Length: 132
Image 1 (cartoon, rainbow, N blue to C red):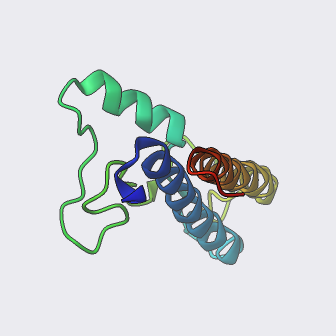
Image 2: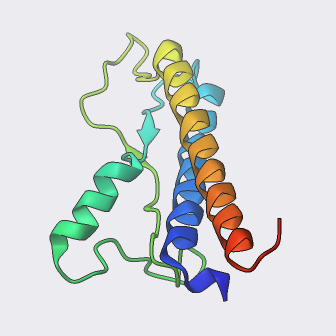
């Protein structure tokens, strides 16, 4: 029942997206000293949501198989890809620890926002049915 409400799907999509981006950040940090490692990332949720809205088909991004994040849901998350234009160190590694720390802080904020939206929507629903 609650999974069909747009606000819950959006909050769930944002939380899943933040988790997938955090996984990419963790992978980058784990390989910060690996020679030849290329930084990976996922575009932010707002950019993907805008792409979805602009596509006009109501779908935008698509999961290609059931195991993908968001498969069967309204807000799928794409797989992490190599970040183009990232500066490389002399050993060929393109990970900057400072950038990853900033990304992790942003992702924490995104996840907290998803939880706040979910909690607020639950409060409104509970008020609507007369429960606290």
